[in-house]
Length: 202
Image 1 (cartoon, rainbow, N blue to C red):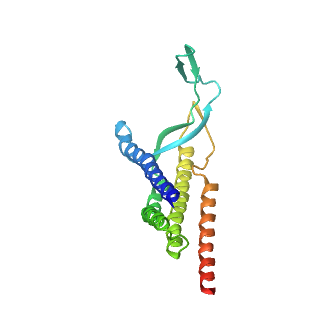
Image 2 (cartoon, rainbow, N blue to C red):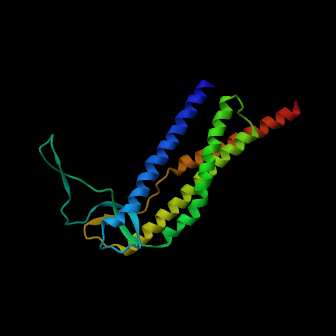
């Protein structure tokens, strides 16, 4: 049980760190970024576009390498810019309820880890707690991916670059890992049902 407690603490700390790292800087930058450009209209959406590199004939950017004492070329992976408000902005209203469920799911995960550390593992309460944690995260991630796709489509339609070649849209989250977590959740739920049937048989 000590190993489970240690792993549980690590998981909780990792989740808190990930939330702080991912959402806080992005929210603050998005809130303040348009104010840095007074000439721009305020009805804008911040968007990050993936790029493959520079167009033919464009001089690549470079950085100075102190060890080699010369300039070395650098290739951009993405650019941050602005587009007019579009359908992607309204996805916030769809994502928000699931973000609230994610907060409750995080609470359920803590309760699950506490319950497991006490030796209460295959219980119906833990099954519900695990589902309340996993499924809101999966749905929220899917909605975020849809929002990113809508913003990408709008950006490709609106923006014209003489320097960069835009990349195709790619998913941000690891959906193989998401599906594995869903599968393990349902395996855990099935194990709970089998245990309950065995208990009734005995």
